[in-house]
Image (cartoon, rainbow, N blue to C red; front, side, top):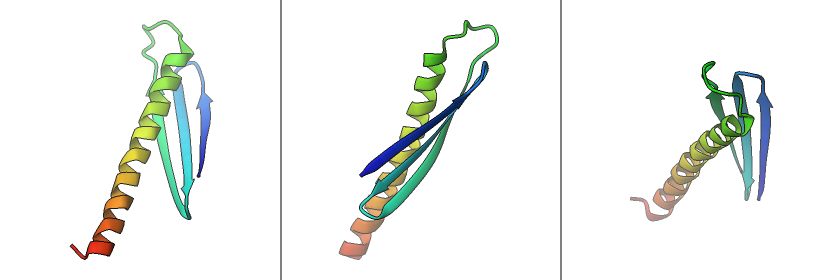
Length: 76
């Protein structure tokens, strides 16, 4: 298994691209966060939100892939 996170950010936006390779399956996801201009600049908050959103999407993809595999084995 290999999980890679690629982060890009500026003063307002944070974008995380996540890639997961798992036993021949490949999953990709993107998470984004935007700082409200009225909020203080605390980059770690945007990073945490963007990473969490990317990983949350990967979680959904993994659950869907597992469900499809279960259905193909059980034919249900």
